[in-house]
Amino acid sequence: MAALPLTDHHCHGVVRRDLDAAGFAGLLTEGARGSWESRLGFAVRDHCAPLLDLPAHAPPADYLDRRASLGHAEVTARLLAAAGLGALCVDTGYLPEPLLTPQELGAAAGAAAHEVVRLEQLAEQLLTSGVDAMGFASGVRENLADRAEAAVAAKSVAAYRVGLGLNPRRPTDSEVTAAAGLTLATIGRGGPARIADETLHRFLVWTAVDLGLPVQFHTGFGDPDLNLHQANPTLLTPLLRAIEPTGVPVLLLHTYPYHREAGYLTQVFDNVYFDIGLAVHNVGSRATAVLAEALELAPFPKLLYASDAFGLPEHYYLAATLFREALSAFLDEFTESDATRIAHLIGVDNATRVYRL
Image (cartoon, rainbow, N blue to C red; front, side):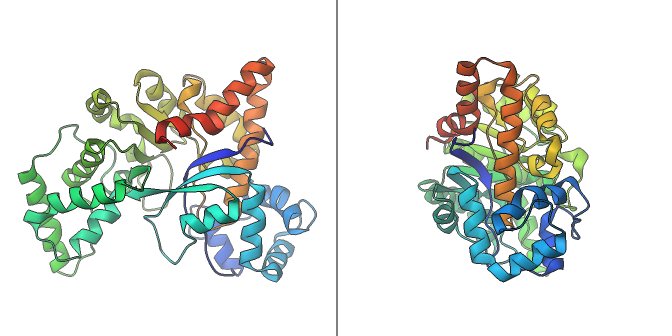
């Protein structure tokens, strides 16, 4: 496992600046004020401290002092290189501040880097470009087709905006025009350029499907503006039934605490895959238990590795390290040849096949 060059099929950029204690804590967990007093905080002290020339379990103050003395560029270089990645699929659609680009992340990690297009960001940029409601549908199709030439997948954050209980029916262009008109009217009244309309989310997903782009869905836990019960992946079941005949892969991201439900969906739908990214480094030493629960029903060719790393390079290293430990422990019950094959499937081969890397 230590030598396996993991393909991180869903991740984000990291910050380009040095962080004080509050800034680091704010990026450590999903809450605005992250806590060192968590499994994730202890995992940072245990696993990351030695890479910064500190003893394992160094106090948080010592860790932050050492981090500051090295500088963000050196810390990022050390942690990403140590993560042992072979490829990254980077969601470039969330930029609260300047972050490392996919190419810069790939260079730091010594890995190939690929882009994942966030559907809502693409549509929101179009809405602020001067397009009218009548031109919205064709504009989305053209822009996404252009981006699809270089991107390996598209991602939907409908879970955050309207929940995952999407109508499976493909919306008509007249329905899309009407919905776009309402959103443009909101923008015209000074509201944010924010896609939060069920018809538009559904339209964006079907546009990606029509292009043959694998579609990622945020599911499970995330930032505080998420209503967790609306992010249960089983809510997607009618839409998954509608997409399955196309053969386009659907990727359920994160999934925790619905990782068992996600595993079930991957068993019953041929084109559905999932990960437990974000959960792995957040649960720390419980990662083995979570992985075992995820794989109770899921076929091994359906689970992909992901970190969902964002902001901190520590997330990249921790996710990879804890995933390797968890998968190694899980595979103890298998023969060596089977364990090796399954490890390669989950760590590399499934993502290579799904995204045609």
